[in-house]
Length: 189
Image 1 (spheres, rainbow, N blue to C red):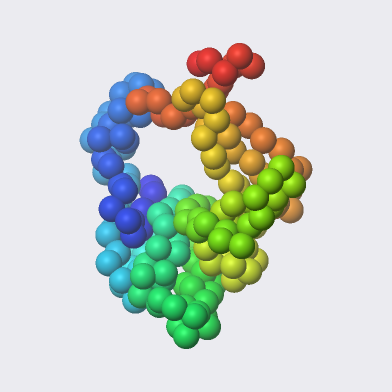
Image 2: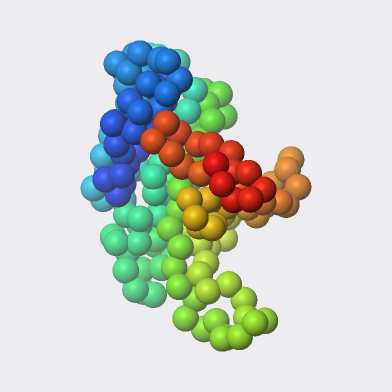
């Protein structure tokens, strides 16, 4: 079973149905193995994680997904005056998620937002034009950090940014109606 905490309204059951059909799985069985909860505030997001822990005492789960871990913290704590409190609350949320991972043996996947780097210098030697939201609090809470960007055509590129067990590197893939597929060296599926 998987548990999905949706903070941005992005969960689409029809995508799961497409992927189930592609793999010859029963669509309803797949959907019945996914619990989705929509969070509307940072406080609600934290309470949903507490409820998730209670659910895991009753039933076995393999995966927790939070999409996006930072979105509600950004909207609920705005401005530099709230930055310290936002980072503290985000840190508590991430520690609670880590405890669930450790206690129940589940994998956790969190997505994050990026923001423009307004002080980036233009030119060929400039640094990145965007950076992840959440700063060091989020970076240090994750074991493996991946960065995604659009490639050529339908291709997407996944880069290993930091990992204790994987070397830095990139891989191309495509998102199709039936799920994820490899991209050939020519950039075609």
